[in-house]
View 1 (cartoon, rainbow over the protein chains, first blue to last red):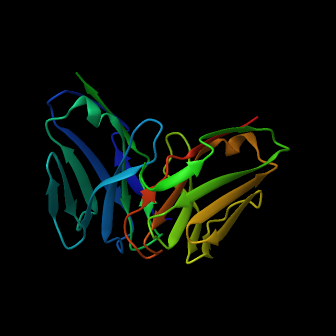
View 2: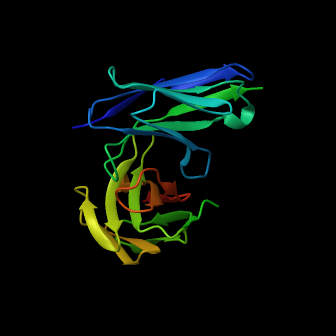
Length: 111
Length: 113
């Protein structure tokens, strides 16, 4: 079946450094790529998304890049802060409920 | 609060019990979902409701029974569960089932003993 691979599973960075999380998807029909942040005791929250007609999107300290040819997309967080510590999930969707999630990356930002 | 409220937050039940999980949203969304989240695994879609009609049952065992009385409320009825059903159960909503991007609730942490 279709799947999304996410790496790394755990990432530890020093406060102020950058963090990069990478995902690869298999369904070539995917055209929407959201990223969710899940803090302890909460549900996942959509933080940024990108559609297949765009190669890069930025929102303050976070950015996503998409390489549709290689079926890769990445989340970049710059100037990390302790409150960025959470589990991050990537996902790929051809539309609607056919959304496939990655297994998640636990990010630790050390003060 | 995200606009999607789930109760209870925590639930411990025996394998012979019957319990229900509740989800409520007042975002004006027409699609609601149940997901299962287990440690170190991707989110697993269980059920999809669009305009109160079930449109997807992702091969979920019959011991899980969903109910959607209206577009704002979603229930998951549980009976004769197994210990491997212990997980975080997340409810989500979106404008409709073809919409992009979900709003998730905080989940119900279920432990089956």
